[in-house]
Image (cartoon, rainbow, N blue to C red; front, side):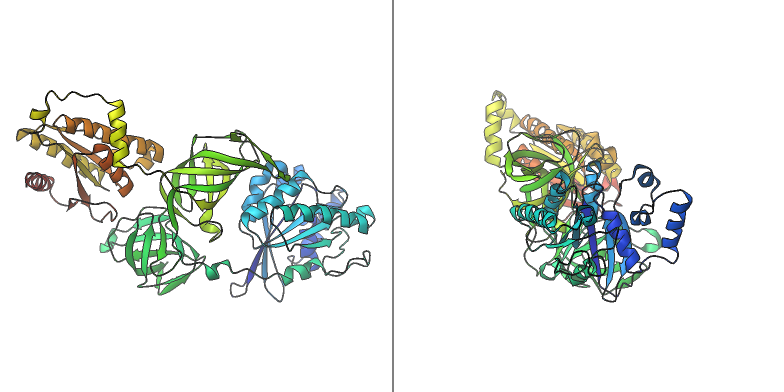
Length: 589
C-alpha cells in the first residue's frame, strides 16, 4: 500500500509477551478494516486448508520463513493501513525474550503503543519489562489490550484483576492515562465494533481507540537540530562544494540562516540547502538533506548543528547521567571502554558509576551491583573521551538517545537524563602531577635555556603533504644548527578511523606525544610532529601537557579547522620548500 505523504501518519508499535496474540490482533485489524491487498485473506486461508493447518489471522503477517517454522515473531514486521482520518504504520515487535532488541527498534520509532496481555496467562515478566522500556522511550499514547478473553469465558473479574495489577505497575514507573480494552482477536471481539460477548465493557472498539489518539507534535517546542552524518566533497567540473549531509531531527531551517555547530562552537551561515538533484530554500523535520556553509570550515561527523538565535542550546560535556538498558550476554563492566554512538557522533565511553539497578519487573526492588547483567536497567554515570553535544530526554528524545557497541554490534541503549559537571584537565593539575612522578636534574639548565624550547604541530587533512613538510623542516633546521627532532605516531599521522583506531587510543597517543614533546623541549630540542585533523580538544591536551613550553600549530589546509588556533596556515597546493622556508622565518621572528 502506498501511503499518501500529504496525510498525517501515526506510527504504532504492538508489543507483549510471546504468544499473547500481537500478530493475531494486527492480522484481524487489517482484515476487518479491509486494509489487505485483494485476495490476500483468501490466499492464506486456501494455503492453510491445502496444508491441513488451522487458519490464524497471525499468518497474514508471518512472511518470514523462520517465523513460520518457529512460530514466533523475530523481527519488527511493518504494515500499513489507512482510515478516512489518516495513515498508519504498525510495527509488530517481537515478544520472545531473545529478541527484545528488535522490540526496542520498533518501539523507538513509534508515536503510540499497544501492549497485549493474554487473559489466560496473565501478566508475565516481559509484559512488565516492555512497559518499563516504553517509559524510557517516552511514548505517551498507550493502550493495554487484554486478549484471548474467550479463553476465560469473557470473565469481567479476570479482566479487572489484570488491569488493576498492571495499572499499579505502570503507575509506579510513571506511565499514566492508559486505555484498557478486553479483546478476542481470533473471534473479532472489540476489534472494529463493540462485542456482544462483553456487555459489561463500556468502552469503544480498538480501532476507535487508535483513531482517537492525537499525534504528539514533540517538535513544536524543540529548536532546530541537525546531526552531521557525513561530509561529501566534490572535485569534478570545478565543483568545490563541501556538503554536510544528514537528517533533520527537529525544527525548520532556511537558506541564509545563522547556525552554530557543537561541540566545536563554530559559527557560520547556510549558503545552500541541497535536496538532490535540486537546491531548495528551506527544509524541515525528518527531511534528509545536505547543507553548504559560507565559511570554509572543517566540520567533523557527529557535530550537532543548531540555529544561532534559538534556545535552549544543546549541552556539551564529557560526563552525563543516563538510564541504560543492557542487552548483551556479557555484562557491562565499570570503567571498561566501549564504543558508543550519540546521534551521529562515534565516541568511546566508560561507565564510571552505577547509582542503582532497577528490576524491570519490580521497580521497587533496587539491586546493588557493580555491573549490568543482561536485561538490567541501570542509572549510570557515563564519561566520554571527548566532549559531545546532546540534549536531555526532557528536551528532545532523538538527541538524547545513544547506543553502546561491543564487538561490532549494539549491546545496550540509553537515554541521557542530566548533564554532570566534569573534572577539568588544568595546567595546575598537570604541573602537580609531573612534580609528583618525575625527578629531573637542573645540572644543564643554563645551557638548555639557550636553545629553542618549542614544539611544532603540523596538522590538516592532507597527511602525506604534512609528513613531507615535517621531514623537510627537521632537515633544514638541523642544517641551520638547531637541535630538532621529528616524531609522529603512524596511527595519527593518517586518518585514524581508517586504521580502526578508537578515540581512546588516539587520546592516549596525543597525551603520549605531549609527554614526549615536553621532555624534548625540556632538553632544549625543537620537537616536530604531524597530526591528522587536530581538533581543539587535542590541541588543549598538547598545550597543557607541554606546559610551560611554546607550541606552534601549522595548518596545511584547503579549509579551516575553525576551532583550532593556528599560528600560521598554508594551502596544501603550495610548494613544500616554500612552506618550510616561511615556517623557519616565522619561528626566527
